[in-house]
Image 1 (cartoon, helix red, strand yellow):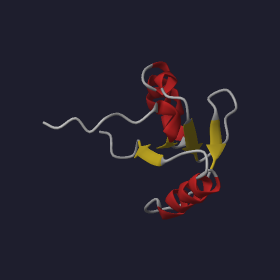
Image 2 (cartoon, helix red, strand yellow; image 1 turned 180 degrees about the vertical axis):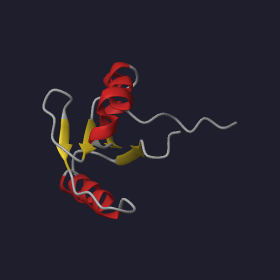
Image 3 (cartoon, helix red, strand yellow; image 1 turned 90 degrees about the vertical axis):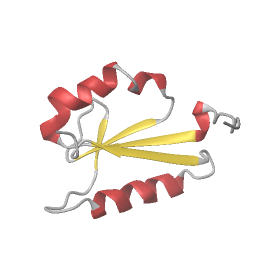
Length: 94
């Protein structure tokens, strides 16, 4: 396979979508495993929790459009700092 190179960690803005009901289990796992290995991780949640480092973002009853638009807007405000946006959410985990 061709070598496509690597992207420097500091060029990637990582957005993690979560909710208060996942703070005690799923979010804590991320914060203890791969979260600390990245420079620019922001945890977007239904509630602000300064201990866990989450910021409050809009919630919708169905779907995640409002939260996604909030994240995209936040990324665009910082687009001069980062080249890439990587996002993940916990709602699909079973």
